[in-house]
Amino acid sequence: MAPPTPDLTPNPNQTPNQTPAPSFDALFAGVPVMAILRGLPADRTVELAVQAWDLGISCVEVPVQDEEAGRVLAAVVAAGAERGKPVGAGTVTTRERLERAVAAGAAFTVAPGFDADVARACRDAGLPHLPGVATATDVQAARALGLDWLKAFPASVLGPGWFRAMRGPFPEVPFVATGGIDAGNAAEYLAAGARVVAVGSALEDPEQLPRLADLLGSYRTDA
Image 1 (cartoon, rainbow, N blue to C red):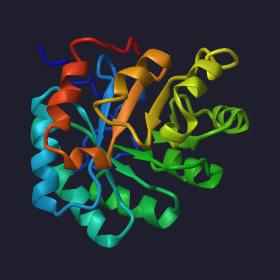
Image 2: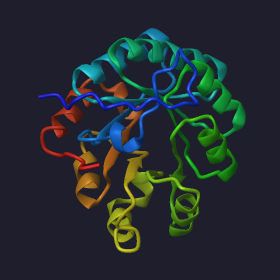
Image 3: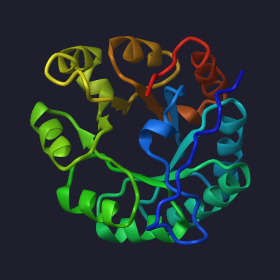
């Protein structure tokens, strides 16, 4: 059975045409897989997003590294709105990209690293922000700013052992493993302590989404 659609709480900072921004706790509840759809035409991106949603993968991110990517994000946001699915903007590393994400109707933002200025700007825009971290110092800095969920990047370089090690000093921090994750190694990262795995370039393989959806029957987050 597909997991339930996250319960979305309206955010007073959202514009009327945007899907209300969910918290990451709601977004990832019971769904330990996120799909990252980068660098594809709008129609193909929407097609993959719909496939992910139909398979029970509720969380979809579209990076906004350029203006065309912003238009692709807007197309996926529109498709998600028809299904009650919030869509996030990835690679939000500058205020300019944040503006692009807001204009497209993104419900949350993701970045490869931690930038306090960008994180504050996302918060001021009413969007939950998922910054990338790779060290204990990164984790402490992000948590000090009030960021609850953190993206471990690049996960394939950090390795599953990184997640086991971080559970010692940071047992309360939910990490999203991103970078080099696919259906073949996702379970290993979840078992090591990642709360969610995010899969990007591997999705060019048409077998990846169905295989990742199979994880939903074996792994559940309790966020």
